Image (tube, rainbow, N blue to C red; front, top):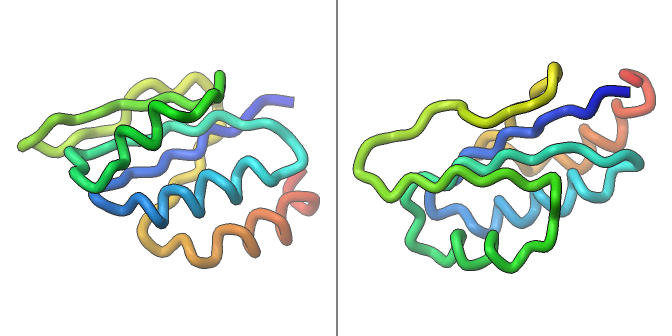
Length: 99
């Protein structure tokens, strides 16, 4: 089965980035995560650098311009925005239904 790339844009949203990352990693299968770190100053880059994850791709934008979608290697893409409170429920509930 092809992996899905979950795209998580983040600008000073470390707490929500960590929640999204954990939710994706709690899935039954392994997927690629692309973090678009948009000039964060809240420790996001330092947290990312601590992760030992071969399926974590990071594009760090030092600013001030915004960044676009880069670096995905899969056919399926899931975008996770600031409304990620539902991610754990959604991913675990619909995952078996979709695949």
